[in-house]
Length: 111
Length: 448
Image (cartoon, rainbow over all chains, first blue to last red; front, side, top):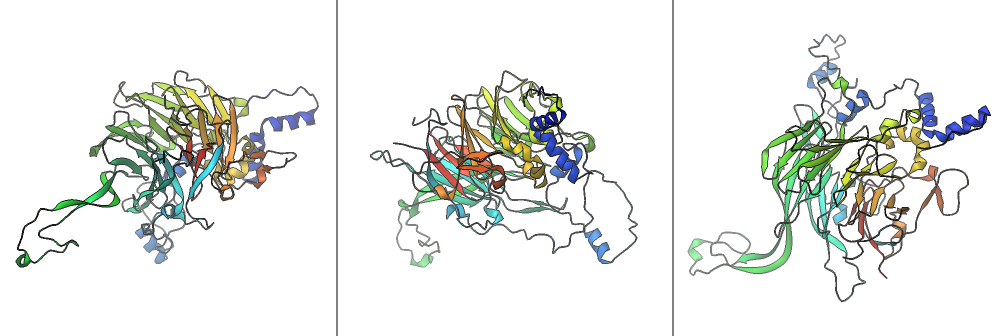
């Protein structure tokens, strides 16, 4: 964005001008106000790793059965601390997983 | 060649057809995910989230009535991909068709490549207009005749039948991508093609499904060091050794396969320097390139990022030669667009046949025509309200702030659920296909 800096020395007007010049920064301030814990590197690894793992839920039968048995002490040997995997706390159950069936219905574009 | 020149403001666009259901309740499977004309423009393919492909064929023009424009009618439809489950990784594999690319026609049949996140398939679409009749051992319905009843011998003959269009999968190219495939591109050599996922680009031979060469690998040894991903890739239209891939950081790398087997080192790096004083939280996200397309003449390439379209001269790496704002008024809405995830929408872009006009989609079912030669642009809308035959599309205007003029729509009234992500332009004529969420609109140049 090419914008010439305003020449007014009036501070308030200059702030307005700056806001007009950088609407992105204004938007950034709004976002930080709403989510103060937001990191400073939006394009960094967290966002990308989340993107690389788009969608589907993990189902681990071990976790599932443990949760069913309500074992409080999770003394599971941590063989690999998979720091790269982002798993939620919620353990999905078969009811949570959506039905995966191929479309037997023809596309409406062909109708 | 009809109407190959222009396409911007001197061309008036008229409604021609709309395909798909009218009701607002859209099933997820019906969401259109890709649109592509074949090389002659006679066929138009769409892919959807349900893994289905629908192909439309242009009717042969009625020469005695030139003002009666040819329409696209359903030619073939088939289920290309089905939902799968990767048991090893406990991951669902969506059947959504990410891209369709046609092969140039070599014989009577048509071939296309369609891909979902993990598997590419080569489909053959062929016509059958005659069938053998008069078998000796079988009845017409296929049942075998009792051998005792056969007393004479006859020669089966081919008789004409109603045209049947059959689609059959000829090759399945699987298990070569750990991450999600975002692009496929057929090489000008007509023998190979590339497929790209978030971190790798692979080269395939169309005849060979059990082997693929990795030509780009940007996966870091430690995934925590990951800073960018591949967002799109395409082969050069004429130079079979050249391809480009774009990144989430707004860069494009051009690679030459003659230089080395692994093209991790680019031949050219296209990047526009950023003004550091303008940098914000959103800068990198909105600079992510969602689509890259070479011009037909092979001299330029176009990139689409969240707010703009840029035209690059392949001979100049340090900045684009042209930049067009698609919807600059959204810059002051980035906070809400980040919250509703719209900032991650991936818009595509396309060139017209003679590279003079480019087109891309926006929100509220708006799409933009950017005329390079005339330096003018227009915003049009794909809407059921402008569906009378040959109705001319009226330009739309968005009011960014301040006083809203008559006929303008204010930014806050835009419907961000109505996105036009996929558009296609006929290779020779001024006919465009515009996909809304679940409808396909076909617009044509107004013919007097």
